[in-house]
Amino acid sequence: MKRPGPLLNLLAGLLVGAFMLSLNTTAGTRSTSSSAAQPADTTRESPAATAAPAPTQATSSPSPSPSKIPVPDARYTGRTDDDTSAVALTLRDGRALAYFCDGRAKESWLRGPVDDDGTMRLTGKDGSVLNGALKDGRRIRGTVDIGGGHHAFTADQAEKPAGPYRATATVRDARVDGGWIVLPGGWQVGVLTRDGEPAPAPRIDPETGAVTVDGQRLTARPAAP
Image (cartoon, rainbow, N blue to C red; front, top):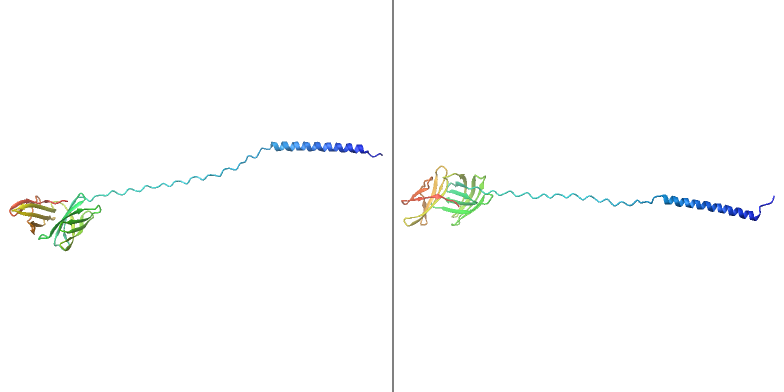
């Protein structure tokens, strides 16, 4: 048998090469079509979650300060702790007037403001000083410094006719200035000064304030700030 010639071998090689080229082209087309058919990756990085704002803490408004209650108007009468003198006070519209009297020669009229807490510092023209404080709205506890003496006292709230009284006039060419303290139960203490000379005062009528001085009728009136 004769072997195939060189020409046949060449033809066979060309056919095999053409067949392989055809297979490669077909495979490339399928691969390209498959890649194009796949959807593009559209996944995006999600934005970072924003934290919710912290709740605003409500600021409480300051509570209003309690309104101040003024000290009520009233009268107070009492005696010193050593029972040598009497003290009477009248409180009105945030001010106070006080009268200190021993019923013989020592006396003083004092005035000043009353603080909202009931404390007071009253002064007299003669340099006397009263320091006191309202206790429970019913009594005043304090001290009076007068003429070198120091006197502690307690004065309880009192109703008319109790309280301090005063009368000033000219009697027989003499300047008369009288002060009285009417205590509960009708007790009285007073000093009457004639031209600067003190002496025990005559009694007054607690209901009308009438008093007779050296034969002349005068009227003592309730003393107030």
